[in-house]
Image (cartoon, rainbow, N blue to C red; front, top):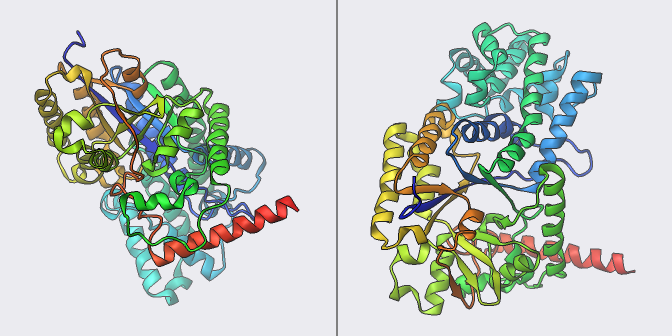
Length: 486
């Protein structure tokens, strides 16, 4: 099929979790990294593996990559030598002795209810019944004395079964056997489940590396620990989009550029070590960019970055360009800075991205995909030269799917099928777009600092509590710098 006249479409999935480990004890305070690993990161890889025409950009936060490696290592050691696991929920699943302390048992019960009621709990009758009993115990703690170890074991197993990715559920006999058993799970059952969790986590990074090497996926990164780079570089950049925004009294953050470059370089080191490739693209944390942020990304060797639609519109308005051109012609192309011509920036179609993230979960999958494709067809029809444009659909690759039936299995399957076979649309990656001479990019003198959230930096600064947080952080950094220099 000829590519002539086809509108390029990039699906960019951002995978991120903060570091949940306590800096002193190294205990995981939240289980979301490994739960999203077995549910979402595994499913997203599987859909790309099974549809030959699928293409996507998958963006990883390096602190997430490190945690995935750590979970895999800990589970392997636990099953091999009996060494403990530093995640309380996984440790309980693995332990032959469940906690006796009442407060500990209540925490465990509460933790095993943190799942979408409609999609993850009600779907499984046995889990639904256990969850109803568990909620009753939480409402009437005096009933805790009637809670048996077997009840806790069954609740733990079902919690992890419910969080299992749909592609894992359909392909792994262990999951099917445990679901059929439904109750009275033994320690051996729990260890079988733990072994499967470890297998899924251990396989994730090699699978994404293989997808990258096969050309189906472009792997990109976010700086190491998810810093909001424009604010580290210049806290006053918050006023570019919100001129009246209050700022911390002791700004700026000392040594901000040094820290930004450290996060970029450390992120690249971890990325290369764990995924075996050098990223050329960057989704800055929360899509937060500024003129200086893009200049530094270019200096550090990146070829592309991306941000939100509102950032582009604010920048065009500041340059006096927005009123002269239609939205489609402005949004669906890469842009470069005059001061950083080697880096091109793509901007997210907020409407299309948010349809997947927040709307289609309640739709029939076929109808949702048809609606999405129809929007893209309308865009292609509105452009005189669609082959010179690109639609950027950028969103969280992990949190949306628990609101979809069966973790979005049918929706994602049909989405890739329809887009891969469409005569007027071409699934591609950002790097492939840049390698195409037909791509029509334009130049901006400056970018108005902002993020994908409202096109501003107000999520992180500008209110009394947020500013106080920055003041404390700046004070701590100043003390640290004095001690280091002494």
